[in-house]
Image (cartoon, rainbow, N blue to C red; front, side, top):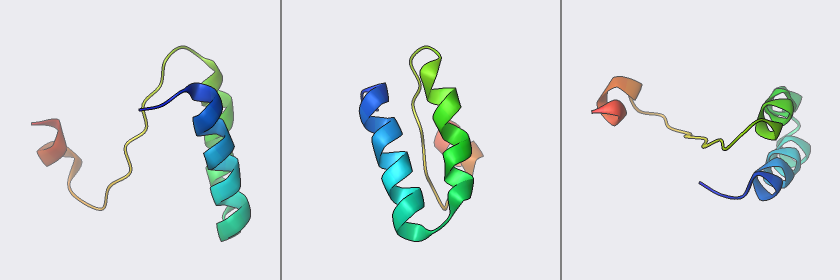
Length: 49
């Protein structure tokens, strides 16, 4: 969890660094309310428990 402005910045930096511009689709979603992002390689059902 973090401040939305900081999260937008790091999403943009990651997209620029990795060349994967699909991450930029997240940026407009970070302008609405408080948002938390979870990045995992594991099973989401296990995390939810």
